Image 1 (spheres, rainbow, N blue to C red):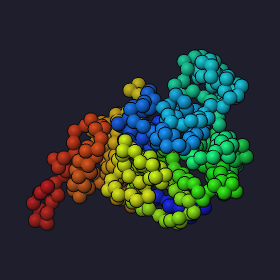
Image 2 (cartoon, one colour; image 1 turned 90 degrees about the horizontal axis):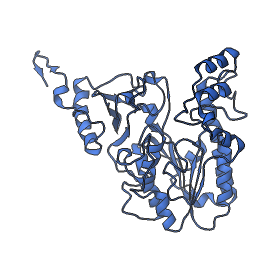
Image 3 (cartoon, rainbow, N blue to C red; image 1 turned 120 degrees about the vertical axis):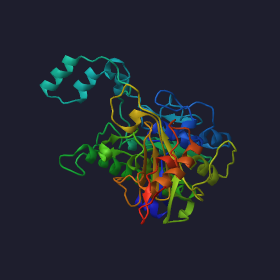
Image 4 (spheres, one colour; image 1 turned 180 degrees about the horizontal axis):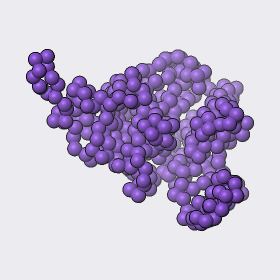
Length: 406
């Protein structure tokens, strides 16, 4: 990725549209805010707005999607709309086995994949939980397989193509790719395995770029590398993603390599939103469609970036912010302001305080900024449906004469 970045643009503050997979992809492909779309924990992306793949297909592009996420980018997710070719689940005996209801129960999963100690097996048998899990297990597809499928398809194309490659090797459930198990530690932690997945994907992206170069295709192709969300590893007492809008979840990598490596090594320090992904793709292809809002990331002209995530299921016992309601945040220059679903508000200087340890919303100066950012955020999204943050919430400052004032 560093080599690709040296040949293109690096966006230092790219912000994902949402905190988890489906709404982020839906926003990227349609150019619409996550809260304006149907994509949610329980519903796929519908056909209310065209996707960039649908538009490019109508303009003569070959379109293909090659995805590894078995939960939210498959053929029932809605993000496949417009792609002429879709590769999602593996066609294997293991996938057939995992596609049965019985093998998706905690009883079977705990015995097959849990601690193999006799006591653990006995506990699983004692619980005898036969309720199928909401996120099913799958015969995992590795990046090498996804990229092989894409390269096979690309080699057959005789017209311009648009391809979507979804890699899953750094995603929960964390399983190190073969040969990378001890890349970072002899006795790897979950985070070591996560990092090993990133290292493995980096090798595979290198192979992808090298093959396109050998075919004489690379310098006539736009490559965009990004992520639909980040991951938490204990920050604010949280893990995984989809449960907050803190920076580890929404600050994502983004690099764009243009044909001929134009604008090589350029860095974009301003915050940008991946909601402008669709507009960017259309801009570089020269295709126009008024139904896709936003502007090109190659000439960003935004003052603030909004991201949102819906509430977790009401039955969850998670103490995460999203367990208390939907969330929305706005990033403007060095600041991130968050509206929580429980009626609380937060403000952080993310450039000086990346760990977000100091909440500025209670300081007089920070509170005034929060009032302004709250108004900007509410003008963009209705989430969450909590009272406005107004000056009445700001603490009173004390002058040198001891007089209190707003």
